Image (cartoon, rainbow, N blue to C red):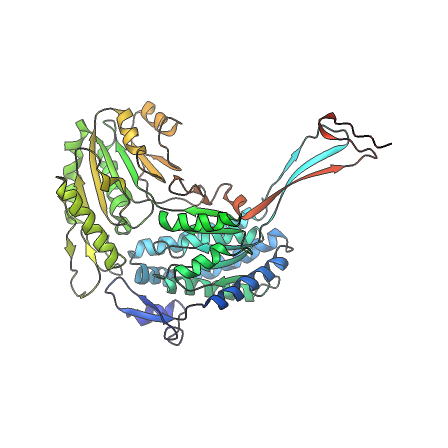
Amino acid sequence: MSYATLLSAAGLSAEQLRQGTLVARTPIDGSELGRLVMDSPEQIEAKIQAASLAFRQWRTVPAPARGELVRNFAERVRLHKDALGALISLEAGKIRSEGLGEVQEVIDICDFAIGLSRQLYGLTIASERARHHMLERWHPLGPVAIISAFNFPMAVWAWNATLALVCGDALLWKPSDKTPLCALALHQLLEQTLAAHSEAPKGLSQLIQGGRAAGEQLAAHPAIPLISATGSTAMGRAVGLATAARFGRSLLELGGNNAAIVSPAADLALSARAIVFAAAGTAGQRCTSLRRLIVHHTTYDKLLPTLQRAYTSLPVGNPLDAGTLVGPLVDEAAYTRMQSALAIARKAGARITGGEAVRPPGLAGGHYVRPALVELPAPIDISRQETFAPILYVFPYDNFEHAIAMQNEVSHGLSSALFTNHLLEAETFLSSEGSDCGIANINAGPSGAEIGGAFGGEKETGGGRESGSDAWKAYMRRQTQTVNYSPRLALAQGVKFDIG
């Protein structure tokens, strides 16, 4: 199937794709897919004002009716799942099953948000004053700006957008300039849903195409109470500082240098399967990708040959082809960073399996690599940094406390894993003495997450939480309310203030 056919199936017309200066390319072969119009600062300001106006009306719509909008949107996404999944493969380079899986994640979070629309619960609080009662109530927050990354060009927006919509907020979406077509296609489905929803005001969701300057404008704008940003730690630091300077809120889901520990009590067959997917899936371009493997010295020589065989045989190629498990890196810069990291490790004496460039048959362009296993006796500086590529650093350990210390020594704190069938090890890893990450798994890799759990991490991962659990509270404002249903004015803490 041609690229033009895939774009058309996703609802993108040839006319839309030849209008501007923002060039969309496919990492499959580097060819141009289209050109979109970038929003000027004036256009961005107009969209912010339109979202602010729409919010004033949307906040008055009952939450279950807001959930109905999300339900209708999910139905449209279901109808277009195959086309949207193929578009993700085309523009982000994910293999077909991962592209379809991401669209399923959009559908799943819609289902979560629909149920949530009837569960925006507050609290009743006992008052110390007679004939008084206290409430904790949640109100819509305002226009929410969502800055998303290339590696999950649809799902991460949906994590934020669906919750924000049922919470009564308006939306502003600035996608990565590497995946503008995925954003356009999905947003068009939302716009169709909005147009068919009688209570949805005009301008409720705005798509903003642009680069760093567009994100900076959103982060600094006083009319936007919450910025939810997914991307690098450097990007998050800039967004967080700009937002904090005006006392706005930021929800940051940033980098990860995720580790897995393999205990002597691990099921090695299960561990190997989980490790290879977590480290090589999505060509190592997930924030939850496995980047460090910490293996007990008695298990090391049993596990490593299995991993080496898998790494040398993984099918690398066109993500649209059946059977491909590792697609391309997103661009040349990603390839250069990977090779630079491997050169540093090689100079430090690392034993490296893989890492070389691959040229799949029939593809003249694109940046394909064989995933790399980098064996070192102990961590080095480059292994403590996140390189967004399929590099897995492997270290031995002697005792469990040492392994946990190695796991926690990096500046990020997103996801972690332990492979063991030993109860005491598992419970220690999940305790306050164990993993310092926002996500901790036993006998499951660190990569990927279900929408029911709040997603995010600690330290330089940003501390934000998106998706499930009580993450909805980030998109609302809390108000403590006191009601006096007596004819007397009673002051708290027994204070007396009689004025006669």
